[in-house]
Image (tube, rainbow, N blue to C red; front, side, top):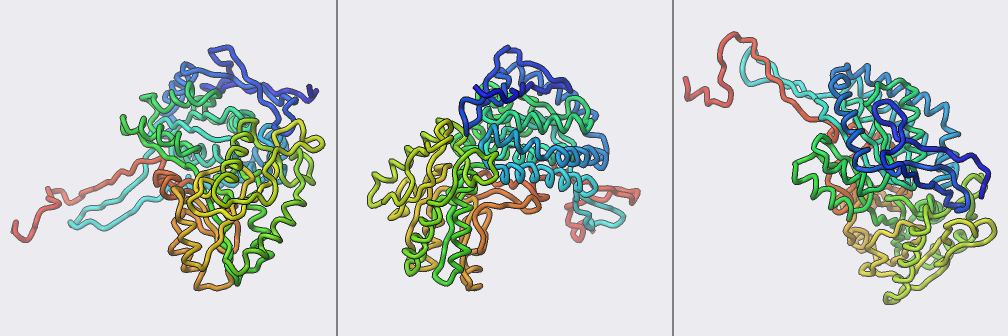
Amino acid sequence: MSTVQVKETLNYIGGKWTQSRTGRVGENRNPADDTEVVGTFQESSAQDADDAVAAAKKAYASWRVLPAPKRAEYLFKVGAILTERKEAYARDMTREMGKILAETRGDVQEGIDTAFLSGGEGRRLFGDKVPCELPNKSGWSERHPIGVCGLITPWNFPMAIPTWKLFPALVCGNTAVLKPASDTPMSAFNLVEACEAAGLPPGVVNLVTGDGVGVGGRLVEHPDVRVISFTGSSAVGRRIAESCGKSLKRVALELGGKNAQIVMDDADLDLALEGVLWGAFGTAGQRCTATSRLILHKPIKKKVLDMLVDRVKTLKLGNGLDETVQVGPMVSKSQREGVHRYVEIGMSEDRARLVCGGEFYTEGECEKGWFYAPTILDGVTRNMRIAREEIFGPVLAVIEANDLDDAISILNDTPYGLSSSIYTRDVNQAFHAIRDIEAGITYVNGPTIGAEVQLPFGGVKDTGNGHREASHTVLDIFTEWKSVYVDYSGRLQRAQIDTESAE
């Protein structure tokens, strides 16, 4: 057992760090070395969720009327604190989630960027001022908060994604209960710790750790939770939408992806190679935007595949705290086993051929962790399960295309539509792809991963229910629109009446 200090993660309810009502705690282990316990977390219950919702509801009354620029000042303070603690929080994240330090630093940085972006909205939160059809009358629209928000977040971006939800919710005047994934409670704890250090009033931000049924399910069903924002699988998202639909509760879903990178024969092949290496094997493929399919134009397929295999074999796997490591572990044993099952399915389907990988990686210190060798399957066709279903691991399916139209058709032929990519030097082909690809994000000469917080994030089809996180579009999740009319004519003016016939 490692002698590294074990961090106790508590719930945060009504401005106080508390233990769960259950009295039970779970272990948070390092996926790069399963013998190392990096922390403990509260195995909370529905009662703990109820306590947090009650605290958030109480705080909402005063938080909602605090001027938005004042609410924003708290977010600027949180951003500054995250900046100061960036390295420490990144190291905690690598230990509990596994991805390499360069990526966890980026995860924290995304939270910092979101703090300042959301804080800036405190002096905007734009509505529309429009002319009215009657004299001496003004009209405009404005945003109003909704209430208590339940935020249910995944383990792969354990600080960035919570901030995508939390900070916009707060600047809009809502209060929140955050339920992080059980695999990564420490990063959520660190985020809420920063919020406390910034002086946010008690009850505005609450944290409850535990499983998805007891805690997450209760937030979804609780009558005082007015908004649910969830990031996770499409299967769970459907169940949440069904439950929220019974009470007409606002629900925003950011779900799965089966993203593809197209490479045409006129592309810069070295650049395309770098893109797919990063897109497919960054974060060990554990991103909803990961490159899961590589669609290669037939004339250059063999050349690109040979180049790719040579590079994949040089990737260094290991503990993400080692700055020379390029690929970390799967987040858990079950995640690794699930990825391997998909590889076995792929090898049993039609003509799929294992080019490299396809096995647990146990060399050296990796023997103690949940590592999976970067894997490439060739000869994949669009109807195979490995070409249609989300794998969420370092597995790349290679598919051949006859031309651009064929490539786009293959790319679109999945239930998902999150991110996409095309490599080409032909501007006409690029714009053709932008127009016809069915996805919420399209990159030209860039990988499928790398979204920036100032642009909308989300997708189509089974990837979500139409909402977009990040950018100013996220404000539509956390606000209600109110239209305001002021008649200063001093007399009754009848709108929506045919004035010509009335005269």
